[in-house]
Length: 36
Length: 221
Image (cartoon, rainbow over all chains, first blue to last red; front, side, top):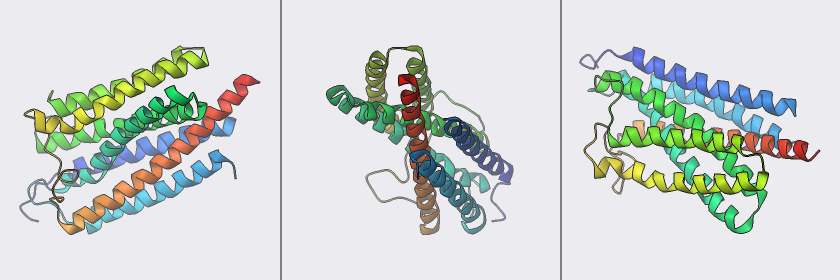
């Protein structure tokens, strides 16, 4: 796709942000349930 | 196996599968010609948005039934679904502006879809704050149920807002009366991503439900 915009950085930012949010929440749940 | 452990394993499976979706979306799904690679944000943004809305609908349904049956399990489920919905709403409200910046040229616009989604996020936060603020368990469950039902009533408005108002946000290309207007390869990637977000929702809710139950048992001593 030579004529497509070069904006892969935005895609990477969104993918990294999503992974961070999900992993952080999974870790938070793990910590909270492990205490009980 | 305890409920919390089942939730942990479900979540772990969901996170591993999410890695697979990342690979499929980035490497094996074609780049859209007009929007470029940033269009691939769609595979995360839309499933997260659908589950943000579904989670609130489930909070509302559980709340309605709770007000009739007074079953604490329904209140516990509503609490769990609201917390997970807040997490998915956070994903929607971060990936959306990133996508918007490159495609629309702006991070944010106060159009009906974006504003009502932000309102839903605040409603989620308000729901969780309310639960934290009321000490009496009976009153907490009743007040939260009323707010949960209000949140559920907002969801159809959010979905239809792109039809009711002139919005910068595009109209649905999957969840609409006619067939999805998307090439097969992109549709398959989206469906896989939606399935993974479903697994994550289930895993998170199971863990959060188990946590709520353990806290109640701890409170009872």
